[in-house]
Image (cartoon, rainbow over all chains, first blue to last red):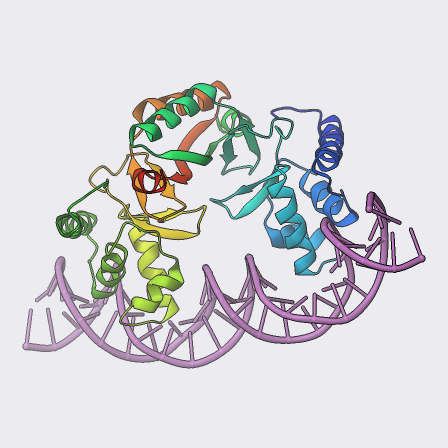
Amino acid sequence: MTNCDHTLCKTSALKEAERVCEQLGARFTDQRRNVFEILWQSHKAMTAADIMNEMTNKQPPITYRALEFLKKSGLIHHVTSLNAYVGCIHAKDPNHIGQLLICTNCHNIDEIEPKKAVSELIKAAKNQDFTPSLTHIEMLGICKTCNNATS
Amino acid sequence: MTNCDHTLCKTSALKEAERVCEQLGARFTDQRRNVFEILWQSHKAMTAADIMNEMTNKQPPITYRALEFLKKSGLIHHVTSLNAYVGCIHAKDPNHIGQLLICTNCHNIDEIEPKKAVSELIKAAKNQDFTPSLTHIEMLGICKTCNNATS
DNA sequence: AGTTTGCCTGTTAAAATTTAACACTTGCTA
DNA sequence: TAGCAAGTGTTAAATTTTAACAGGCAAACT
C-alpha cells in the first residue's frame, strides 16, 4: 500500500471484490459495493459509524450486514484493536495471514505478509499442541511517512 | 497456564497484582480486586458484562474503570478478537509481547511468549520503516485438551 | 491532630454500538 | 413461471460503553 497510486489501487480492489463474489456465488450488491468503496477511499480504518455516515442508506442493519459479508469473504479486515474496518490488500490470497501496521499518528494502515514470523507463531502454537485456525496480528506504531515528518 | 494448579496460580497472580500496584503507586482497591479475582477464577475470557454479573457492585462504571486500570497496569489482557478480558500470566514482565492461544471449543486462553516470532514481526515492520509500540497477537483454534478429547 | 491533595468511588443518565425480527423483493433455476 | 435462496428495508430493542459530578478516603504536610 505504501505510496500507492490510489486510483489504481481502488480500481483493482473493486475488480478483485467482483471476482471473489462471483467465485463465492454471492452478489456484489449496491449496499456491499457502497461499504466497500467507502472503505477504499483511503487506507485508514473506519468504524462502523464512520462508514454508516457516508452510506447512501444509513440504516445500521444495512451497514452491519454488508460489513459482516465483506469480512467473511476476506475482502476487508476487522481491525480489532480499534474496532474498525479497513480494505484488505491481499484479498487475492484467501489464506494469507496479514500483519497490520497501524499508524497511531496518521491512522493509515499497511498490511504485510510476514511469512517467517507466521511460521514461527505456528511453530510456537504447535509446541503447546494448539491447532490454530485463525490468526490476528496487529501492531500500533508510527509509519514511515510520519517518522520522516517528525524527524 | 496449561494444566496449572489453579489455586496456586491465582494466589501468585494476586501477589503479583499487589506488587505491581505498589510499584505504580496505585491502590489495589476492593473494586479492582473484585474484577481481578473474578477473572482469575479461570483462564477463560470474560466479557465486561460477564464480569459485571459477578461483581459485588454491579454498576457499569465500576467495572469498566477497574478493567481500564488493570489493563493499563498490564495485569489483564483485552482479548480484542472476542471483546473480552483475561488475566495476564506474565505480569511480572511488563514489556513482554504475548501470543494468546484462544480455544474456540473450551474457551480457555493460554499465553506464550514467542520470542523468535516477535523478533521476526519487528523485523518485518522495520522493513517498512514502521516503528512499533504495541503488538497484539491472537490465535483462535483448538487447544491440547480439546484436541485430545476429540480424537 | 487538622487540612490539603489526589486518587478512587457511587450514582444517575445518556450515548454509542450492535442485533433481533419480520415482511418484502430480487434473481436464479427447475 | 413457480419456487427457492439470498439479500433488503424497516422498526425497535438489546447491549456495550462513556459522561458528568458529588462525595469519600488515604497519604503527605503543617
